[in-house]
Amino acid sequence: MMRTGLLLLVMTLFMAACAGGNAPVPPVMSDADQVEKVPVAGGSYTNISATQLHKLLVAKDFTLVNVHIPYEGEIAQTDAFIPYNELDKHADQLPADKNATIVLYCRSGRMGAIAAERLVGLGYANVLNVKGGMVEWEKLGYPIVKR
Image (cartoon, rainbow, N blue to C red; front, side, top):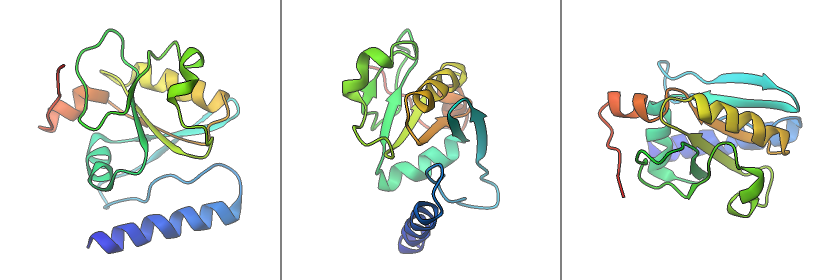
């Protein structure tokens, strides 16, 4: 089952790379999971569900960034904490490769959406935002870590 999911992801990435344009969105993981492309100046970002993030974390191959201020906890495996309104100042914490996948989240999804739009404006092509943020994550029973 894991190999099939990985194969689907690799095939999706390959087909999108050959097609040009924006980088791919993660494959739909089940009929219940949907992705939502959000057009913004300079391209688009993709909203994903907390359930999709949970599934993607099993074989994590992306940068996970908490953009919420003030700090109210985090999802395990978070790579960086960058305030949604200070992305430009902390570019050193972001992948140098503008095609790398970056997943953003905040408490409710609002700051994540603002940050996603900003990253697209900075030239990042594969930006995902967890719609509903940590609120949705907790509602589904997934844990929030507090430092």
